[in-house]
Length: 267
Image 1 (cartoon, rainbow, N blue to C red):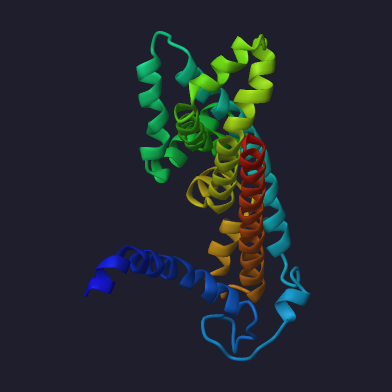
Image 2 (image 1 turned 120 degrees about the vertical axis):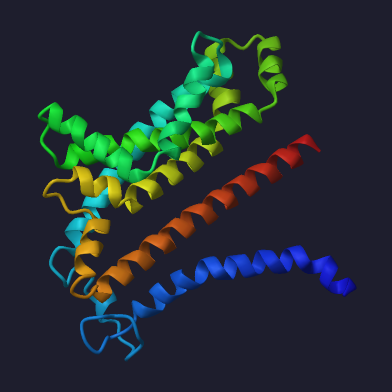
C-alpha cells in the first residue's frame, strides 16, 4: 500500500496515456492490413499495399492535400492575428479590453454546429461562393481564439524584468522585441500554430457547412465510411501522427539544448 500511494499519480498518468494512444495504435496497425471485404475493422492479413500506393483510391490524396493547404493558410493567418490580439490584451489598456477578453472565448465555447451554420448564413447573404476560401476564412475565425489564449498565457508568464534589463542597457524597443521578447514568446506562438493546424486539419462540422462541393480529408472520410474506408486513409492518418510526433520531439530537443547552453554559459 505504501508503494501504491507513492506511485499512484504516475500509474494514473500512464493509464491515461495508454487510453489516449490505443485508438491511434489501432489505426496504425490496420494500415498494414489487407481487409477481407470493404470494411477495414478487423485484422485479416499483413500487407504493405496501402503504404506502397497511398493514392491508389481516387480522391484520397486530393482531399488530403486540400486539407493540408487549408490548414497551412488558416494557421498562418490565425497565428498572426491571434498573436497581435494577445499582445494587445496583455500589454495595453484600452476601452473595451475586458469585453474583448470575454468575446475571445465565445468561439471556443460555441458549438461548431452553431458556428458553422452562422458562417454559412453570412456567406450566403454576401453571395460569396462556397469553396476553398470560405472554408479557409471559417477556419481562421475559430483558430484565432485558441491562438490568443495560448500566446496570452505565455506572455503573462514572462518575467517583465528581462525586458526592463534590456531597456536599462540602452536597447531600443525594436531591439528589445527582437532579441528578448520574441524569443521568449516564440515557443508559445509555435505551440499555438501547431494547435491551430491540428484543429483546422481535423475539422469536419464547420467545413461541411461551408465547403460547397469542396472535399477535405475529414469530409472524404465521412463519405467513405458509408461504403467502407480504404486502408490508405489509415496509412495517411498514421503518417500525419508520426510527422506531428517528430515535430514535437524536435522542438523539445531544440529547447533542451538551448536550455543547457544557457545554463552552461551562466555557470
